[in-house]
Amino acid sequence: MKIALLGGSFDPPHLGHYLIAQQVREQLAMDEVWLIPLYQKDLQDKAFHKQLSSVEDRVTMAKFLKNSFIKVSQFEIEQNQTSYTLKTLQGLTTKYPEHTFYWILGSDQLESFQKYYHWQELVQKHNLIIFPREHMLWHLEERVKEAFQLQTIPENVIVLHKDDLVLTNIASSVIRKRIKKGLPIKYLVPKEIEEYLRKKGLYSKRKT
Image (tube, rainbow, N blue to C red; front, side, top):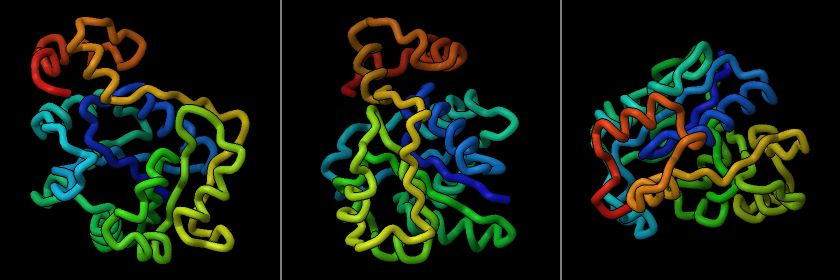
């Protein structure tokens, strides 16, 4: 099967994640899209300084996005160590040699891509899907070439820039801030996640 992987903290998952998964499947004829909640981010990444919600909460919420083609994989969590994209792709390829995996990378990650663990190997040996965030970038391919230090886009790097894509700036950080301020999050997350957040009282007090 062709399987696209969407990694992240999923703290919380939201409808932006669903829109990405849905459209990657449609545009590239994927059989499935796996959501992969991370165990923990590289502690050296100063840009990622917030405290994550528990693994249990994040996985439970991610499962509310499941459907016939969206699945939730606990592969990174099961490793019980810092999550690295390259190690995840290597591990899944070894565990499921019958599948072909593609890692979804938001265009907002291009600026910091060269901080990824062994980023050159990611570009050289694995399938990457670049999905635009917030607004369509007419120069997205040039941005990708600059971030990946490439002269041309190779076949294993797929840049999605069709004008029928539905883009959004919904972000987990925005949802956490709205909850902390007592603002509604209806239409930003599925109803089940909204109810779970209310029941658990997540994000209402701690720093975002």
